[in-house]
Length: 224
Image (cartoon, rainbow, N blue to C red; front, side, top):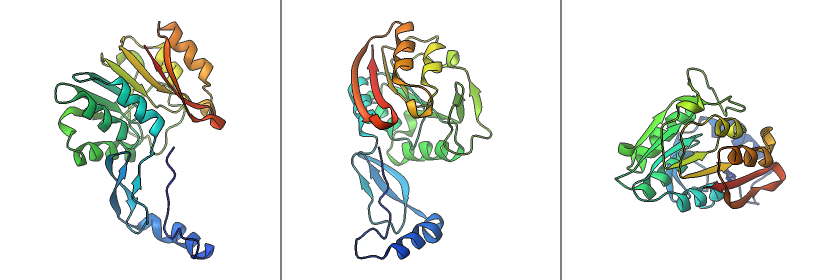
């Protein structure tokens, strides 16, 4: 999981200066382009010292890289900063496409910008929409359309990073993707067992389990 390294961050900088920067200066700075797990994202305030995050969402992104094949159609529920959508688009290539759903207004804009920054916006369609019950929306979700899981488009790979809504989404699918990559969120009321039960009900077998933040009940399951 990504942790931002804010400026000032060196040991020789007094804590009071660091706190003042983070509270009063950093929120008002323009953002520069940083690299999140090989994906360019305009996400980091201008004066932050660190602008490379090779391990950003590494567990989920590794699973997406393994699951998506050339020519695949991919659906991403929970667009985040757009990194998983860009990775999926790169793996699918020009013959595939990605459809992403993100309910938080600022993140929806980021997903679109990230796709454009990385030259894949021609095959990444981004929708300002909430899929499922919206257990936790990270930001302002006003204006987001409501999309029932049963209305998700057909796809080869489904990626779920929807902050506790994953079991509900799985149980109400009408589409049958070849592979499902899902991040579990016990911390938001949906433990891994509930997600596994939902996958089993839909006829999927978990073929890979990767540990992300076990203390919060966050694991990444790949099911076929």
